[in-house]
Image (tube, rainbow, N blue to C red; front, top):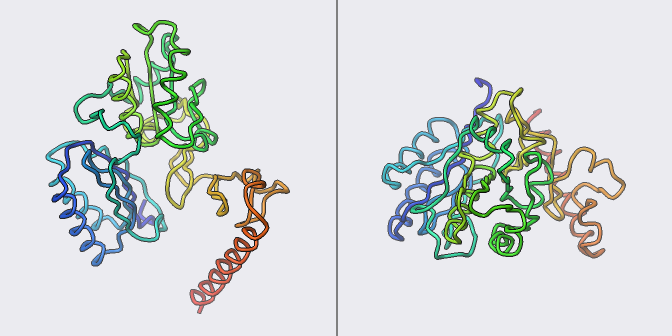
Amino acid sequence: MKDKNYKIVSLYSFFPFHENLILDLKDKLLEIENENDLSGLLIFASEGINGTICAEKNAIDIVINLLKKYIDNRNLNMKVNFSKKKVFKKLKIKIKKEIVTMGVPEIKPSQDNGTYIDADNWNKLIRNQNTIVIDTRNHYEVSIGTFKNSINPNTKNFSEFPKWVDDHLDNYLENKESTNIAMFCTGGIRCEKATSLLKKKGYKNIYHLKGGILQYLDDMPKEKNLFEGECYVFDKRVALDQALEQGSYSICHACGMPVSIQDQERKEYIKGIQCHFCIDQFSDDDRKRFEERQKQIDRLKVENHKIYKD
């Protein structure tokens, strides 16, 4: 780890967060950013904190110590990773209605949610024939990696999940009273909120993977790992492999979909301009704009490389 200068911390916490404290914390974090090489994305709302930060260790320590003062000794649900490069351009702080958007304001994850399950017990739970496993992530995340035999709701975003529950969940339950419902996501926040939704709707035996896929991959030895593929992350790394190193996917800068090495070899793929996912989505004028943007990106890379060499 000595050659990896940047520490990346994903975190979230559900708790009542008052507006004046939200603004106060935002100001303090922007002060830290001015004095340190701090980047990332943080989302604040009346229901808590969610996000990922990237910086050298001393700056991360300052931020975490600050956050702990605001969350009143609650768990920050941190997942830690390392990188030789920054995985965000700068620090963005967004104040929203929800820290992860579901659109069901009456649920309170900080007060009522399902049962946390750690990595070892997760393996036992999802092997149980009386358990259904639901991936609460978006369809493009599921497409690059998931747990075998898990149910894919095929949602474009998390706010579609409640409707999927209403329309489809009962079809998977042989016995609503006794079937285990196990849910997971990237870092734990979406599946935790999903358990709160299901409890509100009267479902029982509801479980969620503590710390999500990222914590599972960190905790689980390779020979016992039941996750297949790579895990999508919302930063420049795009996806992490099972050793939590940067994986094999990149982003199509036209449509934002993750594309594999094999996808990039397809005839439809033109770097920065189109991929097989978006071949029919854009006009010729759009593609001309994308092409010009890619030329500018390539020029900047060449110029920066020359500066670095000189």
